[in-house]
Every structure is written in structure tokens, then in C-alpha cells.
Image (cartoon, rainbow, N blue to C red; front, side, top):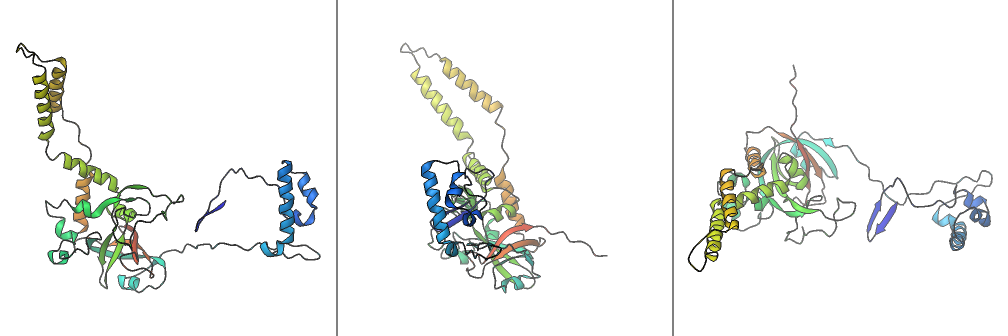
Length: 344
């Protein structure tokens, strides 16, 4: 089934269809009479009349729309020409160095071994003075205890499928109206990894590559941004553990003052007794802590940014020479840890 909406064409197959075949085989459009073709169709009178018109129209304009050439003896029908382009998936090529990757001039996928050097967030890469103060380099900030804005630099709200951030301010990287990775063209909005530049190097070259949400998940140990942000938000709320109890005690004192009788005899009501018991239970049996994805994510960041101390990774990179570097001229699709065999 092929559908077209605006400038987008979508083709899909369905196992069951409500379409009814009225004329079969299609060669009979030319060999049989119109009345003979429509007699056996189990449709209403109005539909039969429409079918007659369609058959007549096909016979009159068959040479134009179907490219059918009749032969006098065999009446052979040629294959219809395709009106779409088939995208051929090419196997990724292996490049021996980053220098070879940088010199590619066609759209392709390639594998290359390289080491991680630096991560630069695109949201603040052009902030004046950041280069001097070394704020844009995450390796300088990841070891700082008070650098909580790493989450703001690397996480945001956007589409989980295409990786486009919702809060993009630049016109060139504006949030697209449709999702190119979804068959319904609808965005799946949630917390995602903000696109960032990953600087990789080998003995021949040093180059930046673009990393979007899906590739960032692989790079950070298959941890989704939604889980990381949820743990980070919970940690921020629990930084002052005594504030909740203080508020509860204040509420209990206020309700106690309201429940004092006019005679001056202050007796605790049943609700206040229950509140006091619940507070004692919370202090005695604290709630179980959930797995802290935020801490593990910070550990991954620190390990990845240990310059010169990590083994090279095998990156799958899409090369699109028509784009500039920040828009995805070199974009990482996946990253794996290669297995080197010892040659004896």
C-alpha cells in the first residue's frame, strides 16, 4: 500500500487488506469485453458503472499510463516501469585511519578505530569567553564536585527517535515538524541526550564527530537519558533530607494548636496520633533507594574522558559531505569495543 501526504510518500505492506480484486488477471482488461468483465463482479449497480468507466479509460490510455505494447501474435505485456527509487543499502567500508575517513567524498558508512579525546556540548559551544575559561571541555569539568550543570549541557527534552532537541535556538538546527525516523512522522518526546561533538583521534588525524541520542545511549553503557535525568532529579530533591520532616512537624504543631479546647485542655486527636506514628515509622524504616543511574553515568563520563588511558573503540560513522561538521558531516551510529587477537 502506497500513501502520499504532502511531499512525503510512504509504502508499507499489510497481511490482510480490505481491498477487493474486481478484475483478475489483469491481462483480461484487453482480451475480454467490458460487460463480460463486470458481470461476474459481486458489487452494486453504482460500483459496476464506475468499474465500466475505469476499464474503458484504461483501454483508451493504456499506452500512456501502463506502457503496454501489444504484439500481433503473442499479445505479450511488458513489465510496468517503476515510479520510485530503490535505496540500496551498502555494506560499511573499513577505513584504516581517521585521515582516510576525512577524505571520503561520497555518502557512505564506514568503520574506523579511534580513541576518545574530548566531549564538547553544542548548546554552549559558542558562548563568549568559554574557550578561555575551558568551560566547554567536559574533561575539565567532569571531575569538579560542584559541576551539576553537566546534566543541563548533555540532557534535554526532544525526540527519542531522531534525536532533535526541543529547545534548539538556532535556525539551522531548528526542531523539525516531522520525525524522519518514524513511519507516522510523529515525534516521541521525552528526555534525550543533547547532540554533542565527540573529538576522536588516532596516529594520523584528529577530528570531531556528531553524536545524537541513540549513539549516546550506546556510548554511555545503554543508559537511557530518561533514567539518568530521573535519578538526577530525585537526588536534587533529596539533598536536604530534613526539610520534609520539618515541614511535617510544623504542620503537626499547627494542627495541635487548632485542636486545643477552649478550656485549655489540649488533647491529641486520633489523626495527630496517626501522623506521629507514621513519622516514627519513616525514621525507623527508611524507604528503599532506587538504582542511581546518574552516578553510574558520571562514572562512564570520567572513564571515557581519561585521555591516553583508554583502548580505541570501533566506531561506525555516517559520512555526508554535503553537510558541515556540526550538522552531521561525520555522525556516529554505534561504538563497540574491538577484540584484538594475538597473532602467534
